[in-house]
Amino acid sequence: MNLLWFDALTGKIVNKAVVDFGVPTTSSQSEQSVVISGYKAVVVNNWFDDKDVSIVCKIYKKYAIAHDLSTKGPQGCPFFLGGHALGVQQFEIDPKDGTVKSTWSRNDISCTSSIPVVSETDNTFYCVGKRGTQFTVEVVDWMTGKQKWFKELGMLANPFYAGNEIGTNGDYIVGTLSGPVRVTDPKKGQEMF
Image: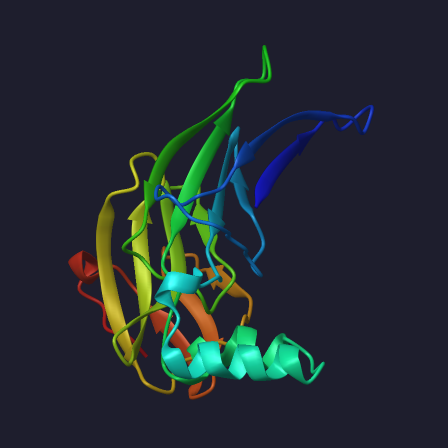
């Protein structure tokens, strides 16, 4: 997958960058919006490299291809079996010369189930991901890529790509299968509702 930068006035491509989430991969893909703040952009991964897919999904894929069936099912197979793709990567474009560089990447964080968002107030990146069987809010420093904190939400807290908001008190709000969820930085002493 490539991330493209366009000139807003001419519509021409200024530059592009290969998105690899910091690891060699044969392919990558995202179903989420690209998060932009200033001259930086973050992309999250929704793709499983073939080496990361279970044998059940590989057999399902071969069956679908052999019988001329849609490949949508096999693509979603890892998720249906409880898997979650890992990968978050930030890029920055130099407004003067158009060069693009990767500023940080995380191949240990999942953001596979929600549209990510950034708070410019405190340079914090938020998304809903998964750890084991639990959906989580993943909170990362926008400038460095370091994990600030995370919060387990439960097995039914899948937002299924729902939009989210940063509240007036710096809280993170998202709709999930189990209802709306509000999470605040644990250092602020407020609990999830």
